[in-house]
Image (cartoon, rainbow over all chains, first blue to last red; front, side, top):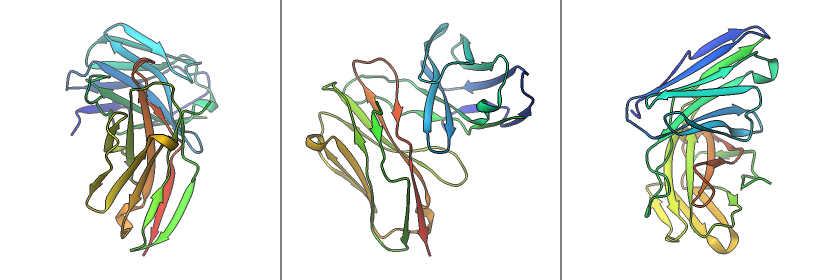
Length: 117
Length: 115
């Protein structure tokens, strides 16, 4: 158990509605990530955080914002959901980045399936 | 440009056959890390292996083996004597030491093992 939980696990919403997905971790990981998974695209990084209040954009950040006010929570917000944001969203976390001899693997949450009608 | 390429979108094998999943990566860093993850039909992502760029030793874990070749920028994954439980989507990923804290994933290979 990697101690990463996502909520909600499933959500159906309408276009134009704001949506917030929550990622909660209990392992005090410093780094947290939001990915989306779509057929043919694999996992694509939306935003990531390298500490409390420190966040940066990934390759598909348009239409998304994030916040990290405390170590254990990383929120992903869709200000105005669109049908193109229908996807499965994964949160991930790790503690060890680029520390020889190993960089830590990512631990993933269970995923949140979002459908935007 | 895609940093991690998994050219095989879908593979089907009959149970007990061996199968190799290809992963080709692109980086200018001299220090980097490669990973394989498994996503079974239940949807969770399961870590399988990590390999450092300065450790080219191949690894075997039961029926699983990994072949890391820096000369061809490849990190291939072989399943020997495949089983139905190996049916899943497999992702290869790259993390580079000098380009921040990101992990780059390939598009995945969907493996179906037919009983």
